[in-house]
Image 1 (cartoon, rainbow, N blue to C red):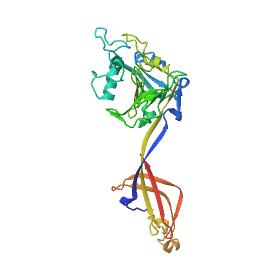
Image 2: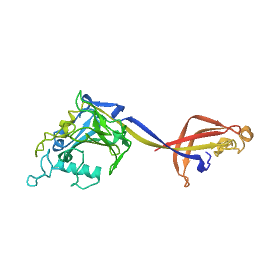
Image 3: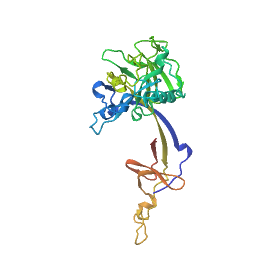
Image 4: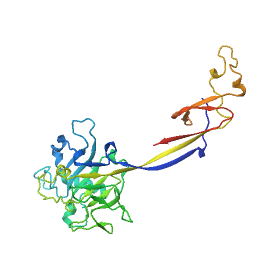
Length: 324
């Protein structure tokens, strides 16, 4: 084993943007046949306003959550009250406040702005993509959601808008279906919703996408599980930036030709040179590269695919790539 201190120019940091299908097993889309809700959750109290959607049935150990559906209402309708003596305080109102705080950075008194009638701003359906599925962010322009077999897809305006809106949750794109006008969809009910790619949230305007709530309290007709049954196809891609640290390890012609292991060339019993070639023409084989810090602590090891022959007539440049 031999050591050499690396110079600053031996290090290079590179960043690459990677895009991949968001769903499990690199599936390009989810369909009605490949989306499953689990009865243990939908049958419970939370099933009224929040449910996970999986790729496999509940009994399958390989089932993975793909995304969640949440229903929020400023007035608390669509779910049972916490306490019948306190009007309006229900799980759906809590969900509404949580998403407003996440997306807008405001208190629970704030409301959304879908651009239609004011009443539409008081309720939403949120698709929350599983963190392992969208990785670093949802890829803008890859979102397509179809709510019936012959309906046009709902998508975002990232491919046609020259500007990007920024909120407390990062980037925000407008959703529309069919035609866009100046980056905004047409419709008396306002925009179809918003895509927040940096936090993996798709916020839908129920009135614009045909899920207008009736607003009765203690009613589950507008629950998240029922909305899942409307989804026909769901396309989505993830994107992430993978940072790689390249380390260039150089073995010049006069370096790494000897071993510090005495048994390499010296007889243990007689203390004499075993082979005369080791004096004038030594040969070694490089099999791995170890990275040490200044405290002589081993931090990483890179293995070569095959031993690399080294002598005074050869130089080697080994590029080590560290992904993180």
